[in-house]
Image (cartoon, rainbow, N blue to C red; front, top):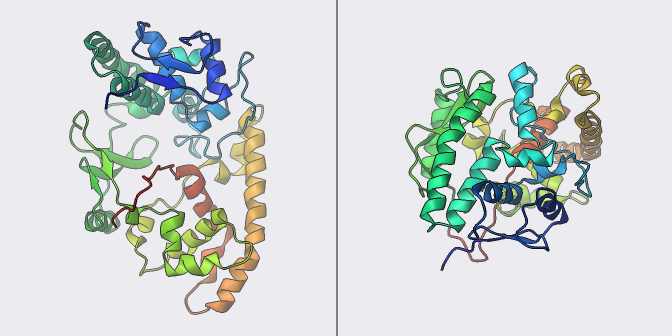
Length: 354
């Protein structure tokens, strides 16, 4: 089957961006033909708009285009840490979209990589376009290198983590058939961001990461566990809170299937939900300030609503559960994990082998 070069824009916000930037290939801005004789810049603009995440789109501030619902992502930025150093604030500014004109140049690493990959996949046979893309990519690294202190060759290269916890995680990943392009867990100075990186060059078209269904932590796999089944019969416990409560308990269960994964996660995530008030105050005057204050209050209220559930669980299983697992800090940790680092995965409508 031939790849489809037509990008179809179904939501009003992205259609509005196409109109604002004159990037639409038709009078009705619902699609863009990547195979048509547009300039590379026009194709990149359309692809960047197409690849905008909900978080990037939700904080779009423009006099020409204003999304119907302005809700700031609770995560704020994966690189905005409690230190709020100059380079961190710079990364924060680069991560979010403040003006549609920003889309005429690389917005951030994730969006640009997605846009380039999209064009290459949808229009694979145009040699001239591929040559232009290659030249663009060659010029891309120096630009990001200059603008982001976290990507400094000397200070920003990933450093492999060692220790028994990390070794246990890698053994578990191999046992459950998680496959990758030699990815390892590491940290990225100077910000201390944790993540994964490959210790070798990744080949074009190579699968970077393959995770079997049973290793994924989501509603279906959680409800297949004894703990998940038990939590599912608690009246009034919705799926979002069920997953959070499950995480609070399962991460301390030595017999948990996901124990090596839980242990490898950081002790703190540093998203806006856990910013101390003195840090939040530094954001006064920005749209982020009000959203963080509102979000922190909302999470505190959700925790208070769950305290009755915690009391019931502790009373029913006094020898299996520990009260220290159900503090607000433990709840906040699980919330930040799910809200800040949960991903959307589309599974085929067939039975997947486990």
